[in-house]
Image (cartoon, rainbow, N blue to C red; front, side, top):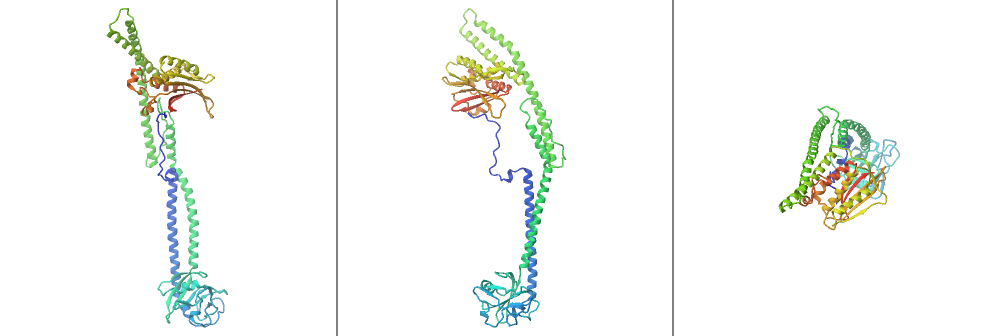
Length: 522
């Protein structure tokens, strides 16, 4: 049998995200950093694209201003370059189709066009004739001789005249912006300027933005963590107050809720939460006070009623016994009625005694605190049970050494007697009932715990009855229980006496047996 049902734990939401399961402080900080990161990305992307567009527009303006003068000059021969600022270009007269090889890397032959002035270093010029790059040249400022590969030649040859410049990547020269125009002989003239400066500027801006945005995110994260912690400090105070209140024994007794959340500005959400929490505690304290007063009145009534009922019940039983002992024979109906009165008065007397005991335990009446030998207690109780239920099989499982606990021997005997009566009453004839006494030693405990168990092979406790098995006036079978004389208070007394001794009681189903386990501090 499983343990009685209690407060269940809330199962984690498997569909929730990792961030959704984090504390509010973490979620606020993560959300703030996420929004700031998105803003930085948007600003960085916008500024990078704007700068790149601006620089490319400036480069295109320079390209249009240069025109195709350099490309036109490639149609004529010239002397060799004389120094920096001159050009390396196609030189010796040859057929256009043979000017630039189409396989492998083609080194641009040395040649110069001194009459072409004002060309920036890196300016590219070329002529495309019949779909092939016939001539090409690059303005240099040193003795290096630039190379144009066959693949670059094919890229340049594929360009067609257009109003807007083209972006072309050359294997050796890098990225270029190339302007194409139609020549007077049906050829295509190419003029290009290197775009490396644009790319370098954009890359430098990206690096600067990355460094600045990273530093900004780090600084914002640290500052945000401090601000969020300060902002949520009142919530932590409310949480601490709630935890202290939750740790109080609110189930019974006089409870004073002295803890309150600190007063806050009612205009803020946190202030409103604190005010609502304090208001709720006021209501809870008032309700607990009223409940305690009601319970005290009820306990006092039960104690007074039980005490007052003892005298008339004793009188009824004594007169009934006296009538049954008369030497003259009684009519059958009268004899039966008197015996029923005697039986019911005895049952009512037991009920009054149980109610009076529970009222005293509820009132916190102190119990005796003497050494009690549980082994001897079990032997006496099992002997009484064997006499009351000869149709059951009774057995003992005791340790070699006596198990002694501090407590009230009479009340502990009542605990064991009630458990045995419960097993006898609610199991069929022939069932086996075992009483076991043991010592449970915990590795992290300073002392030992005495374990007293009563198990039986009966049908067990119905599932719907398990959560309230130790509540008062709980019966598994009302008709049978009343016929057997049960008051429905036996297990309630077991729980109350055990609690008064600082112990616990539970019921389980183990290996086909119903087990009641009482744990008492040693």
